[in-house]
Length: 481
Ligand code: AMP
Ligand code: ZN
Image 1: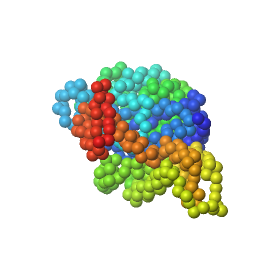
Image 2: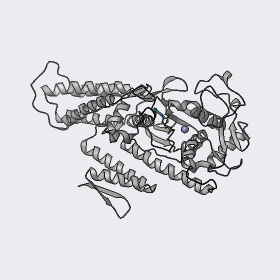
Image 3: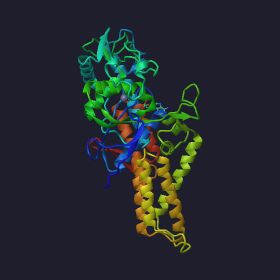
Image 4: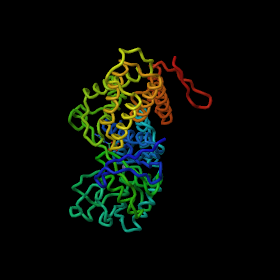
């Protein structure tokens, strides 16, 4: 397959730059995963959908992709929400079990949401709690290099020790509060201080043993440790939503580069926020939606996928139900065209002075599509190339029917672009993908002992007329009843 070069906006340089993989033909990609203490909202899902688009575009451009997405399963909010029901004298074991019960439940739900949205699973899906020894080693290494110091059982990063601190968020080093330190994982730009790497355990919190006493990792160290362990000392792309630029990603750079002594990530790529009807989502405003809320309102998840991906990832997206309807209409148009091309041409109204050569018209559309995608994932322009092709070929087909060969070439292009957008599949293929995704979700729910969720998925499959067959080898087959 022909390999294409793609360019992306790099937050580090603030320029659109070509992505030149470290290993020819292969892209390493790290995306910060969810903090699993509740349902993901559609703002979170916008970021994961943008990253799926990015990944599928590289796959479509002929590269292999090694993708790591972590699951943050130990963090302040997780502890807050999982420990409430326990007595003050609960054992550490009981505290860990309560934390794991919450995070396993929401990890399964999260993976199911991704499957519903046809997001490709990552190659590596590490849980932070499985990498505590790596985190401790990394902190010890920073301590040995003079970049970290312990105080009352916690360990902090000394930002004045790293000349490039602030390079990603483009911070003014003058304004940094050298020597002051914070324990919180999240803080604003105007309080740039030494940040926490390891937190000493407070009463009522689960802990691990460490050289500094009982405690747990800070949020930022998790991604540095897992990223370096699974993708190596350098990677091509690291991505998240814009809110992660500071402090999370800035601190990841400080930790990893402080330890490695050389640049860690070539391209930092950030997706803009999703707003709802012009406002930040919040429970009190009643504009806070999960994917399940929308499905319950009758929204087709693939229309949501398209509504999000048809907008440029670096522009704030204003979610609205009107926008969803527009997405549904666009999809109807592409799907109807696909059906028309799958069928045989009718004899049309005859020769036409504006007649064009379908093959060269198609080639032109393909090049316009890829030129737009290669230019910082310009999806609005890429989709425009598809829509003008549809108008032109529909008009042509009305006059002189396209031949079978021409129709098949058009279908191949629709298949190629559907490989990225996942919104205009062949009808049978579409059912396959959805059923397989639901079966996988049911398996994950069962593995997490989340029986209610597993039953809910089984009922959903039943309502679709799908009969499941548990096979002897433990896999699950299915047929349409
Ligand atoms: P979290 O689970 O809070 O760590 O967030 C998961 C991902 O969602 C991160 O990459 C965030 O940057 C992203 N995110 C959070 N809120 C929004 C939003 N309203 N729009 C787009 N992305 C968001
Ligand atoms: Zn991260």
